[in-house]
Image 1 (cartoon, protein in one colour):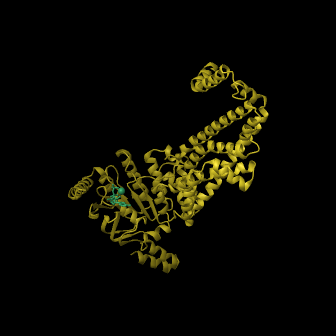
Image 2 (tube, rainbow over the protein chains, first blue to last red; image 1 turned 120 degrees about the horizontal axis):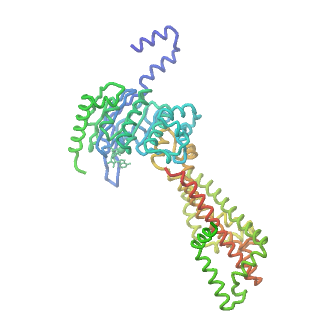
Image 3 (cartoon, each protein chain N blue to C red; image 1 turned 90 degrees about the vertical axis):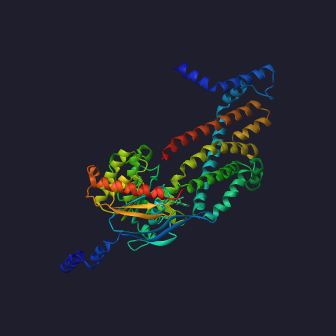
Length: 287
Length: 256
Ligand SMILES: Nc1ncnc2c1ncn2[C@@H]1O[C@H](COP(=O)(O)OP(=O)(O)OP(=O)(O)O)[C@@H](O)[C@H]1O
Ligand SMILES: [Mg+2]
């Protein structure tokens, strides 16, 4: 269907051939393929730990994936491998056909971690401008302002991180991750340290940000509610071995709101996933 | 208002007043000659009578000490930058820094004199040299102590975090990270630099408070010698206070 349309347009001479190719390429630029991914850490001599043991997953471009699982099951490790911060011991990860390392060289990735990692000596504005500087690009002033507005912090442009609340810092951190318009967004428990109410607000905001420009997103979270609220698919990881125990598609209509959380469908999904999570935790061998 | 501040000064510094009182008492009771131990009165009088002279010499010492400190800092900083880019360099320099720190200055000065001769420039060289290594060590460890989350963030942008190719990371993240460390180095080193300058002046100088101390002593002008010593102590405290203030003021902005 799409390609037909393109053909028509090309015949009409609206798009140059090159642009058509780019368009066609774009459809698959942000999909992620994980194939038999494993990660083994060596703790001491001869003592090894398999943090991730065989994960297969296909993530479509623009999809929102939430990753849940008990503590220590390898979620962060999996995420770090996708972000090119760790190399898999086995298997491979491809982002739009490229390795994660090739991807980060082209600034296609944005990450925000549980520890926000903002630079304490830089204002909110400068923190968001930092990705441009680190990548050696001219700072796009409009873009930085736009991002500050997007996360609702335009009044705090000159505030240092220590002058911001925990939630505000996380928002700056997410804005910073979005600065270079990444095609893949990686979030590792960005709201882990927030109280339940703020967290819900932040979830709403994250949904709003994401729906403005659907970006392939992987979010690690400990909150099943958060996962169901935000994701297109929720992946449940089991510990030892670190595998995907369950992948649950969430078909709730978007945009989702507080009312969505009251629906029976939402609650059923929540109950089902919570039960699955409990089961995974119980059946895990004692540490 | 005045009484309040007077009583505050008293409650804070009564120890110093007590010491001065005891000193005066000791000299009067034992009826000591000025050559053995001048009274506080004599010392203060000497300071006031030669105010211009002492001010000029104190200024000279201050300049040498802060000049040496500044040069040492600059040199330490530049070489720490190089060490960061080429870690093999730090493998050589760091042990050397520790070694040099443990050589007493009195043993160290004659060697420098052999090379550079007597005079203010040698005092400056000694002060620079002894400030250099601590500055180097503090700056380098500051560069290297960037938190893992921050490094990860830079990596995720395809920005190298080490070596020559990591200069952007260095410029925007590692270097600013080292500011608190450098402030600490300055705070700790400022009084030391003054001390080193004084000792060097004492041993090999041709002017400055350290030189005044030894010169006046050999002329049997003990009040003058003691006045120089008193002034030197005051300067040292001042140095410490100034750099502690700077440290406190700017460190704040580096806390997340
Ligand atoms: N750099 C490392 N070296 C050695 N072992 C590691 C390393 N990083 C993680 N591990 C181990 O891998 C396992 C999975 O860790 P990971 O951080 O991925 O867990 P997680 O699912 O993110 O847990 P949490 O929810 O608590 O953040 C843990 O047992 C941990 O000890
Ligand atoms: Mg984790």
